[in-house]
Length: 157
Image (tube, rainbow, N blue to C red; front, side, top):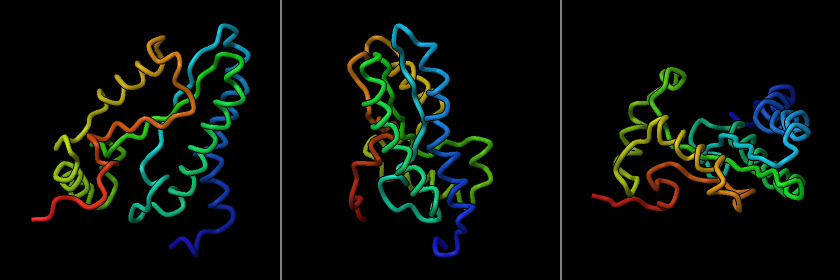
């Protein structure tokens, strides 16, 4: 459980999941003299408890705070920083998650749009955030999850 996480594992999760964005932007920002867009991926576990997500939820919460701070810091240079919070997607990496098919089925049954998302859905959202159409959007978390994140108590029965 979370109480058993070592300081080293905690630090690794934070460095990989949030600090790495700042490190990347330290090198990318000088190469964006006309401004630009940076996009990272997060997950609902950064805002709510998601079973078995544990220290990664803490790391994603830190990432989302980092997105806001970087957006504020880089905004005067016309560099936008946003995050996409994607719902569960059936990928090779996800195939290693225990009961992932159950997670997909549950997501589909609860999300208002009653669909699971695809990598293409996330790619289209990223293309939008990176485009001039999103030129006034920064420091935000865009949920691409069929509306799952808005549901408190799903329809029972």
